Image 1: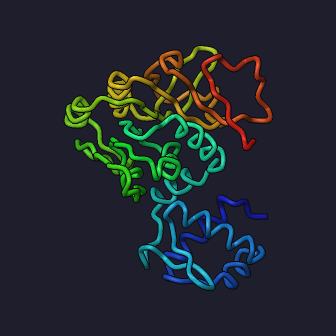
Image 2: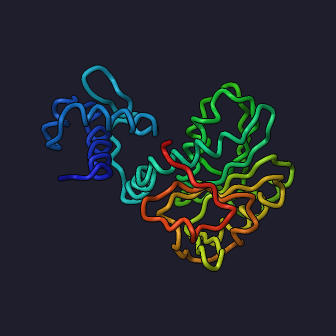
Length: 256
C-alpha cells in the first residue's frame, strides 16, 4: 500500500498537471477511500500546496509539474509533518505579544506560523518558505536580504548578516540537519547557512533548536554549535527513545 508521503507527491503533481481533479478520481487512481483523499487534500492545503474546492482540488499554479528539486523540497515538507507540528506548537507557546523573533530556514520551522497567528509579534527571517507562508495581519514580517540560494529557499552571505545586525530578538528559533546527543554537536547540511544561524543566536535573548526525533544522533555536513548553547532543544517524544539518554535542556513534546 502506498504510504502517505507518496500519495501526497502523486496528488500534488496530478493537480498541478491537470489544474483540477475530483476526489472520486484521486480515490480510484490511488486505490484509497475518498475520506482518505479529503484528509490528504486538507493537509496539503494547510501546507499551501493546493486549494480544496467542492468535489476535489485545484492547483495553485496550474500546469506546473514538480521538478526533481521541487519534489524533494515538497517531500521534506511532508516528512514527519505531525512531529514537526507538535514541536512548533510547543515552541510558539513561549511567544508573547510584542516579541521580536527570528525564524530560521528549513521545513521544521514553517509550522510555527499557524501557532503564531493572531499574536502581535515581529518576525524576522531570511527564508522564503516562511515569507510565502505568512498571512497574519496581526504580526509584521521583515524579510532579510542577501544572496538568495533557491536550493535552500533562503538568503545568505555578508548582506544577510549585516541586515540581521539591525535587530534584537527576544527569541531565535533554529533548525538543523542533525544532532549528536553524546557529543552535543549540532549539524547543518550547508556551510553557507552556518554564519546566519550563529549571528541570530548572538542577537537573541533566548535560543531554541527545533527538531523532530528523526534528526537525533544524525550527523550532518558540518557542526556549527553545541546543543548546550541553546536554552532548550524542543523535540517530539518518540516511543523508541531512552529518556535517560536525553540531556536536561531538551523539552519533549507529545500529543498529550
